[in-house]
Image (tube, rainbow, N blue to C red; front, side, top):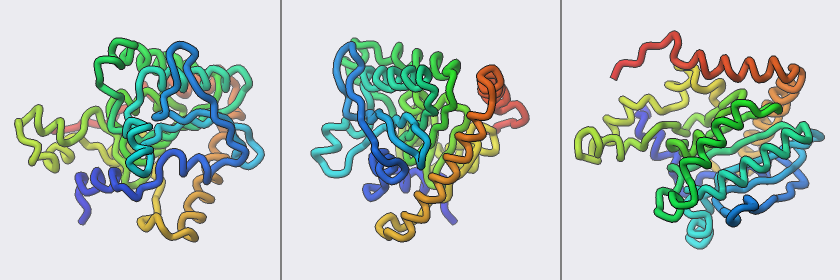
Length: 269
């Protein structure tokens, strides 16, 4: 039987598709936008416009990269404040032109370096949380691998949050949690059980709305085509349902989504 920590390890697999793979398989005519108009361009965040079938959408993804060169360029998926500001700039443009937003999340957490703190990492994340809650256009966020702390949450204030079946979403990694609680990273599996970080756990607590079953063998093209085809169909259906709501109802539903989290659940650790 697969443990919670087994799923954490699967979420970190080297062969796992990255945000860039999802974007290229879900949309056509993708045009990437760069920069935050304040400091620079963060390669850890991909943001741009594409066509989901005939629907123009804004896509924002946290990219880890594939080979060593790409991983270094993308800072292993740990975004700087300019990455989150770039994301917010594209969200506000999406709002202006009435485009739905799809966020694709895969990060162990925001970059925790001195430079990032000096440039306002915490403020950039906080601004995203505030602005996304009131964004007047549909937002769907999908955790495709790691969903670490505020780095993930900064793109996850959405009308619906979906997770892949082998992804995790947590305030802290199991290893860090074990180190904090027991000063022993070897107890990461025990920490993972306590954190309730799997898609099944979070669906039960109403933190997410849907679990997306994923293909285990990423190298099989036919299986991947079916997976991406089904995901595209589900996204398009949900976007159309959200677009049918007036703005006031959309925002009210989003507000209630976060008000109800954990309302009927008692979590025992």
